[in-house]
Length: 263
Image 1 (tube, rainbow, N blue to C red):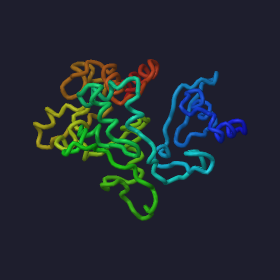
Image 2: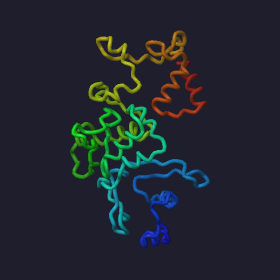
Image 3: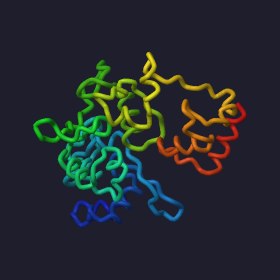
Image 4: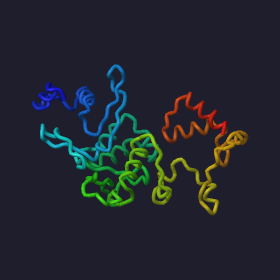
């Protein structure tokens, strides 16, 4: 960092609660686990989170909570729930969980610093049966050599966790699949998300067969999916674009339709 900023930090004169100062630090890549993306005019247009956001921290070698990066140390000062509760739009969570914004904020703020509930958006269990918060401590990454299952309950490895968190909870680009999350009794939110199991449950397999893409054009009369719920390929693409947050542009949607018709 420039000496001028170092001196301000050392003297406690840089207001770290000021968004402008935060943007300046992001431009310097000085915020552990957070990457700022700026337009040509230097205006912050989006923010990305790295694994280090939760699983790294800093020492106090320069000033309180400012210092050398400590990778692998759990960020027990990070209040994830509070940060999420301050989002200007909580509708994705209220729609998913079927509750109002005040309830969502109450749950998020119940976790406290250094905790996170990675199953809330899968099972909808906001609190423990005894009424206490349902989050777990963010784990450190030390002593895991030779350990293949890294979550507290051992349901996934580090690569699994990277995909799980990035694709299902940080709105990252990618696809995550775990058949275990299809258990309606254990994960009613995840299992009921985007899947109508009516016909599948009438079958001995309790599953759907994915229709081949070859000859997809023949489905244009009568509709797409097993029950014709989508009248056109455009409707299918709009569904997936919305459900998975693909953010396809209009030209991309048109190109995809023509490509699918050619198979």
